[in-house]
Length: 299
Image (cartoon, rainbow, N blue to C red; front, side, top):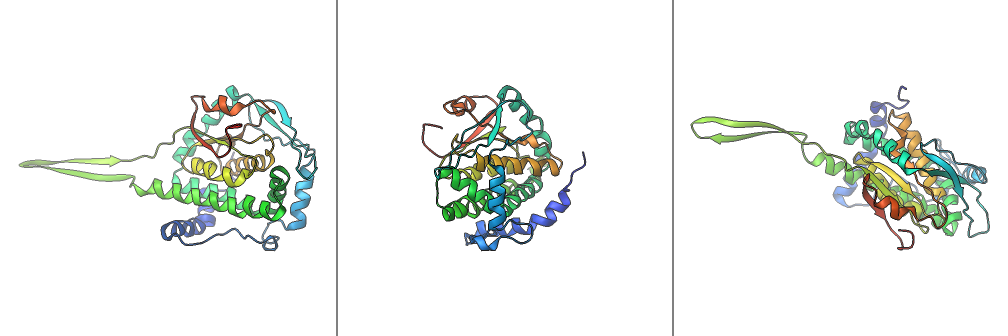
């Protein structure tokens, strides 16, 4: 299937944002492309307040089918602290099927290189940013935060943390040259000359364990750092705050597929209440990175 978004188009679209982010981490100055004020949204494809609320309402009582392999059932049960029963169900994964499928696309993702991976991540963040109002309601009705806190912390501040992770990941990957000539004098003999190649090697699958209080703000740094460095990412949300991270996974899979990559590079591992799959997943040999913020009850 041909890519809907070519590497050239993504680089042209997002390279200026990446360059500004790189300058911000170099100078440690304030900079953000994600507006903090609700009224800043509603143009250039982004949802305004009414459209965001309508998009959230349309999710209630639905099945969020991500199309990922290994689905052996459906789980849900989130109830808003404000009294709304979300009624959204999510795929429950047979990890013996899902994890091998996630590994299948890693070679092409690794070979794409740091710049392409970075701009694909920025496209994911841009599409999430355009839906900030929708995500704010998802965070509000799972975490129990007031709307403005859910909007800012769950929206632009979380997106900033994701962007920062991409920038640092990119900077570290390009800090070492891909090739270098090495020459050692040998006295009267000809010098010993080597052409060296350096390759950043991904570790494997990263596991992001979500928390209930700030699911996106705490989840995005690990998710985007692992993805930008060539790893697949399995997102295991908190059972009471699945929706914000499930929507994130949905967007990531859509962008990856549209850019010609395997959407299974990002997948969701929702669980039944009390199932405790994080402990099982953390010991799987396929899992090579673990990112988690929260209590030991679910981590």
